[in-house]
Length: 180
Ligand code: FES
Ligand code: FES
Image (cartoon, rainbow, N blue to C red):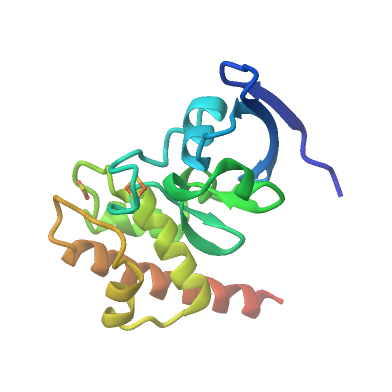
């Protein structure tokens, strides 16, 4: 299997900086960052992946949500060293070679993003939900998104989009199994 290329990237190295090895969206980064940096700061300011948003920066809004070892994770509350050795997926890593993730298509079709600030975090929470539960009820979707705030949409279109994506994901699985 081909090994991912390691990218070295640095943010204002000083005596209080450290080199941290992060695996993000399948790529390996050696990032030089201040020891107090969070995962969110390393993603945005050292690696340049700005999809994960810096909203409240204190765990209240969910805009910074990424997937870490299969779990939705608030990157603004995660010290960068804690992400070492873990697999991190950000919104930039959701699309595959065949195109956008079904959730991304469903958000587009259902008008589930308005200003879009909350969308990357909501997509990451929803990806984990659909991986763990192929047939979520609306209550289960609401529960999975309890930590993601949206100021624009009133949530109904977001829930509609996630239900539509769940239908599409199930159809994709059935098609793959039928082709085998
Ligand atoms: S920026 Fe992380 S929860 Fe608001
Ligand atoms: S679309 Fe604007 S905050 Fe959710």
